[in-house]
Image 1: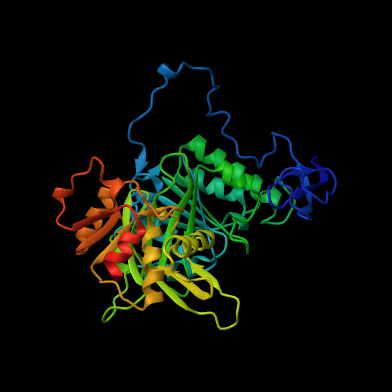
Image 2: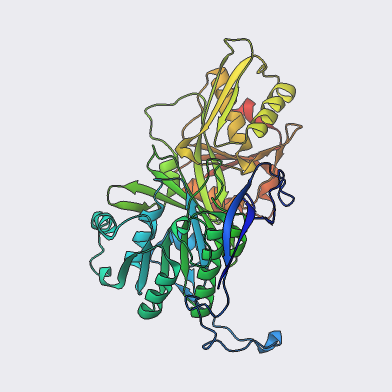
Length: 459
């Protein structure tokens, strides 16, 4: 007979307590404990996921005695996802993909299920089979592999395991983890204890059967993944699907990856027929316009291994209400304030009584310090009402003394600018050490001070 007991869990980090606490001793958050009824069941429960008879007892081994295959990745037939995952889907890995409602998580997972050349079990706890079929009909070119994608509308983990044992899929997709419930816990689906229990059972299944597992997760109003923080520690890879629902472009970022880099980026475009991979994101991040406009510059940045050319838009106007505003979209506000202070102190531009608005075109967020020079030039261009030529781009970090500092992988940035037809690129003269400037057709202009660039551009 199972014993029933009541425990309190922190909704933020999953900390477990026998009594209610006002402040979580683990993460320090206030009023985050919720009461949940749990049930402890014995290991001989008939509904428990069992593979002990198939599993061999583990014994210690020397590192040199352990063998592994060199290529254990499955090609998802999606170059953007392969790049973010580090080269493909790793056998036995657990991937958590999270994003806002309506951003396209289910569409992306269904496209992967329909395109990969292996047997896929797509489990949905949110939609019926008919709804999934309607979405699949909107996705083009699925006829060749549609017979290898199996749909299951189920939320009970034990039923999912029984179907997976019978089908033996090569890839398992669950949409979403917050809708699943386990018979070992008597709390509601989506609660802290249910999410932890279901995830633990699914990870055990994935590791013992060597089946890649994709988990779709919800996010809170603060933008963090719903459920306990321990969920992110349990999985192998955490992907964030970002973007404005009012815009067509989506960005897939990785915040944790045990099998690859965490700085890679995947870009998609949402169409009526599904998500389209964007192979050259620089073209969509640079808007098409008639004539030259003041306050618009192009900066060369690096996201993972991919160089990008991003359009920066700045607007400087007199503060109408006395207190100047500082607003930025896609750029760190504190760094913008620092750059404005450098322009006023080192370059003599009076920005203390000016409203400054900054926007990264395309809805992308940039943290690369190499965008400093492009931001400064955009602000001065808008302040002086002098446009910068369209075929000019920038890549340099600005120091507090007004000096230009070198940035990493400058050759990749220059090559990307040359490929997109730019004629000039302004960089730090300390960044070309060891680089062959003669192999580029684009004009590379190195400077040491930001004042020298303003003299070159604005006279």
